[in-house]
Image (cartoon, rainbow, N blue to C red; front, side):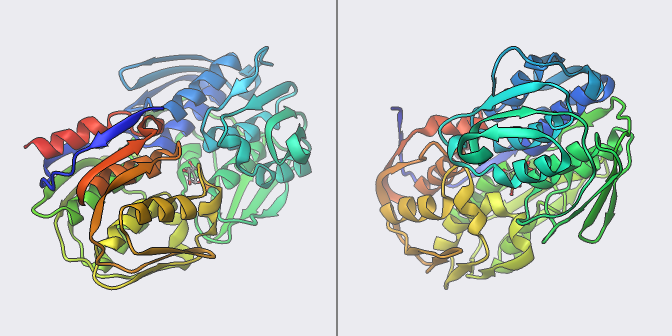
Length: 430
Ligand code: S3P
């Protein structure tokens, strides 16, 4: 097992970094390029382990994908261009890959068998296999298709009207991708708005999708045409440096090329509420995904309540928000975040367990966390539990600790941010 010693130097962070490509959009660029007709060129692709798993799955489905220097060239031949794989598809650690992939395969008239890593084996798939089976796909898997390994035999699909039982962009996107292949119009109702990268990309690839408040409508049989995709930086990766910038004393940093899709910017809203000094300079880049630069400085933070409809817009940022809240004046309460229990780890338990080891006053609640604030953190031995976002949160925590932090399983970070430590060292070195 790898162990990384993180020296607590309480050194300020200064300078600028360019945030790497967005994971959610990178996955979708591979998938849409593969099911569209023609040559799709993707720039600023994120070559993290999760997105590389998506590429590997689509190559096994017969798609030509060239990847070099954050640039992809994908030759798609429509949904019909996908062919029955003669190998098992392995999604690694990636929930987005497996759930969206199943939506695509639901309409393909062949058999596919899918596995993932240990963490994927514990994540619920019924949320996707249920609606896809209702549309007509034949799906089986461990515990009645609740868990991987999963097998899917697709075919003719019928549109459905479906209310999502959880606010999940992965489930929504999976049904949309099946809906594009179904007879009739599929209507999906979301309990709360979730990231809309799939909807934006459908339009970029020349097809239609209608969004009316919480209703999404998509007609089957539409043709997707190859398109240019420029992936903006991942706000979920920028989040670690946003939090470091406001909490490590004497810091002032610039984060360049951060995706600013309003369905993803909940953390910025929460930071403003907590009193963070940050300035946003949005680009006028004409892209279908907005982006900009963010300047952030050490700030006096106060606690807040985070609950309700904002939760899906910052769901992946909660581990680092929790760390930020340990440094605020007064308590922070996070509610309605039970979805954290089914992420790469149970992120309520892992955040609380690991931050307590460093001296934070933080408690798990039924659907979130209670963070008391004003915690003086000390060194200790912690683990990412193989979860990239827990690993990065703990690496930032080390900057706030008196004493050394030893981080187990730091390699998990390469799932979404392969050059995280290079960027961190750059900001510490100026
Ligand atoms: C994602 C959606 C979210 C998020 C995940 C990526 C996506 O998951 O946590 O990291 O790309 O659609 P859920 O849809 O399960 O909430």
